[in-house]
Image 1 (cartoon, rainbow, N blue to C red):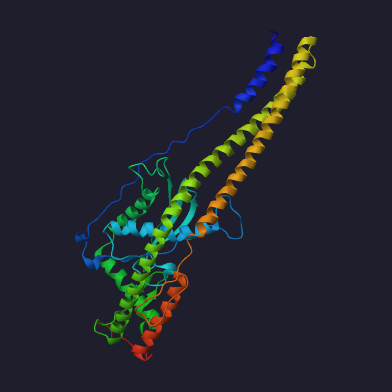
Image 2: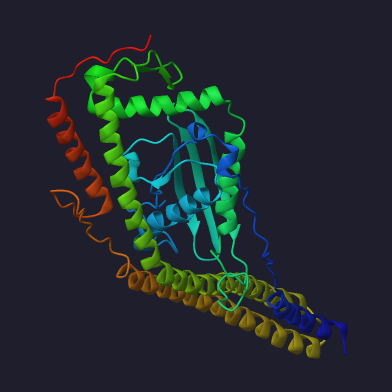
Length: 407
């Protein structure tokens, strides 16, 4: 065959080879192991109580973001803190670990999280750990990819798909804690106690803790342990603990209620996300191949237009038309695949809507109280704070007596 005839056909054939390329993503089934530390290794007075805040859902309500479903994200913002709190508790390295929305009680150590990415295939969180003095221990981004076995119920390794991520957070917190000397831990615990007292009696406890130039809380003086006002505050704090612990039962029930539905949603989202990524990659390759084919077709026509051989011109024209036509077909195919991707996103939205119906918060009634708390957990905390304030007023007559300073 004449080289001029063979070359155009070779060009067109190469166009189709462009879209035949593929890539493979390898995911590991290995997860970071959690570091445990028995309670017997740490004296009780050196254990820091941890408050895990509800996570920031991490989306802009005013902007539509692909594969971000507000209802699901809000549910995840309540679900994920429970996994982290359980992980921290299982290390045996902390005192009480409680989920406390919007820091509506006091804790020695606070964990705040923001969901950056969550689609069943990958989870990325930004976590900030800060103690009650205002000192930030660290702010870090954590990312983990789910393995192909993560959602296999027949697998012996089935567990929380992203447990390794939570383990890394717990390990980093423990590593930082182990670098703090006992005197600093004691200071953190005392500041937590004084901040709780100041919330109920700011007039009496305002000058016991001040803020330095760096925004850190420091103790200026301490009340005597036998001070009657501080003892009343301590009793109120015990009641607060009981309420917060009751709320943990609610979060556990919420977790169990949501667990199966959320697992199924993440499994479906994982498959849809994987398919969506393949479709997008395929669409890009098809469009790129189509453009290449169209350009090659034009180039073939130009290259053979001045040929002295009529046969060559005939073959060249045919090849050019084929190339341009093939390019158009590939570009259209790529655009069609893009439309298919949009359909997959809609499927994810439908899954999210079905999950939302299963995760509505429930009203919680406290049987040992003369009032009933209702609404969301956050609303109940607001109501509880008002109840504690009324208890404090009833017990002290709303008289702000200055505490006795320790000698």
